[in-house]
Length: 470
Figure 1 (cartoon, rainbow, N blue to C red):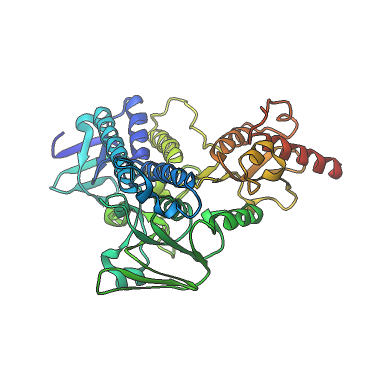
Figure 2: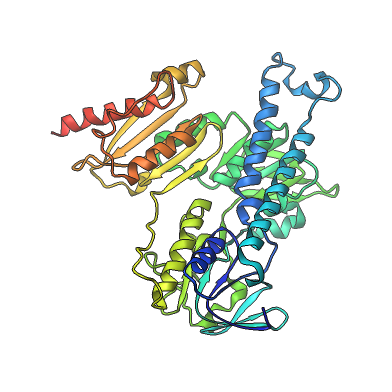
């Protein structure tokens, strides 16, 4: 395309949300471009869900091998294995190779989708309908889909003290060598997953979190079970200040309450913020609240008063890949509606909330979170101690909590701490989205012995609770 482009819709950001938005626009037959500042490849593929799961799998393999050695010899696994055996470093390298292959495939997919409609460079608004790209090219559009994603935060005090020894997953997954030691600040989904993965790969890991909620789990009983279990995986400190000082030898003295260690790196897993600063959104007429957050409508995904529609992590609403894919479609459909080009097609609906921490045992939340339940919600609990498969797995720590509406008896949501919890979470998310009740679910098959039978046990507890209510 030329240096000055006129289109119906410009999509800014070529990640999961942007690609799905652009594909939807193209299918509708409108003129569209997709703009990305690089590096290409979705956040999920480069530094998010895919490399993290590859490293978790690597950690699982090494931890399994160590667990088969006699007690007292597990820390000497490298010395005991025959020459030519795998090592944690080799497993780390294999995980990163897998990541690179996924990124390459993702970039090919983007190029095949967009062709010469893919424009490279940082975009900046110069008016309500105009963008200026690096190099001087301009784009004029009648509507915009903003899908620029998010970026990891770095606590300022730690950044000032540690410099390049403070990393995020943006840098972690580009380290050639497996970290020998690491302190994790923030034990939400990312911090918990990476702390566990590296610990299971044999790295020395310590962690800290500003609250006692691990993996962002709100349900107190599920959180308690997870805290007890994961607290034995590596040292963790909660609700205490963190101090870290760079040493002359390049290592870091780290302390969080009683947890002290000398480490090679400090991983900041303290959240992500929308990547919007370089866009000059105020030039487009966008407005911000008193905390500097973009003002937008969560239903229409439209930035208030501007023909701009948010998609993916840039909205900070359900920052997950599957949500970004759906959000991209919705944003494109809303843009088409704004232009009067949508031909009576219903706008795609958001799916039931579903969040999974692949911590093995998994932590998962489906539907309404515990702190958002109505006061009269009915809660049922079942534990691994009452489940045959969990007994075989020696996993009495498994716990499943189901939430249901007291009047309609529809399933509202669930919180899960269980090996293979990702599968329970999907089943329950489908049930929530379909409006299933404890009665409609009772006749479904539950094979024996499986952890899925925990759902059946929890449904029985719900029915008992409903009988008491009357």
